[in-house]
Length: 88
Image: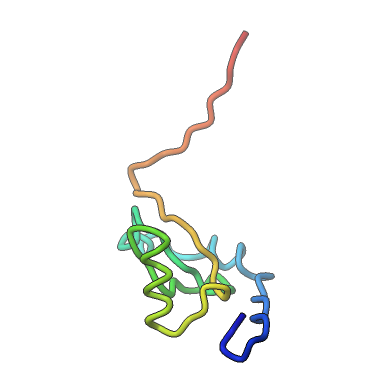
């Protein structure tokens, strides 16, 4: 519930994935290894922190409802997720 006792508006996420994929990797470097809160359209990072609780506190300090963001974790640049296959 928000301050007036009503459910918060659901953010419009229709552009999120497309815009998030276009975000310049070099602009993500300062957030490497951190949790972040993206704008619903995926064009900007609104808050960051070492854990989700810190991100939520930072959002609260900026008067941004946590229900109006997309939470994510930015992997360090040296972390690679490899897919392995099993052979019998």
